[in-house]
Length: 179
Image (tube, rainbow, N blue to C red; front, side, top):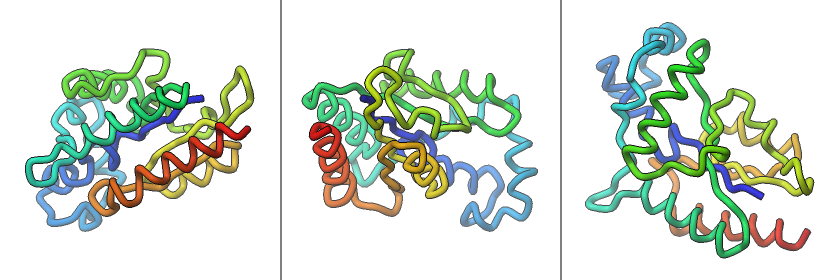
């Protein structure tokens, strides 16, 4: 069983950089979001994202450390399951991997998944038990759950790590351990 962390919106501050890139206060103010994403294709844009921070605390590091430790303690593994920019799979994957290495968040290579089809990783292929996905996008969480996995919707810039995310992870791992 694997606990997967999404990158953008969970450990990488994608939306803050997206807004800054297009000189707007909030990314939702970008008039043509599809065009704006297309303009990021074939660039090193992902390398310029920042981890989430609050005061002097690196929230992204805290999340990754907790997931690593908690997964291992429960006899499971952890990984990254992140979406590329549409039409830019290889380039997005390359820069996301370098970003993970730069920040010390790189899982084992076999647990690094760059895909738009996260739901295909919902169930462990060997034992049929559900995997866990922590993602900021409700659509990804729903598709993951519908495919047999356990989804946790979480946005680092909006939700509390200690009071919301960590207990949800513990609860999901307990659920899997009972199977």
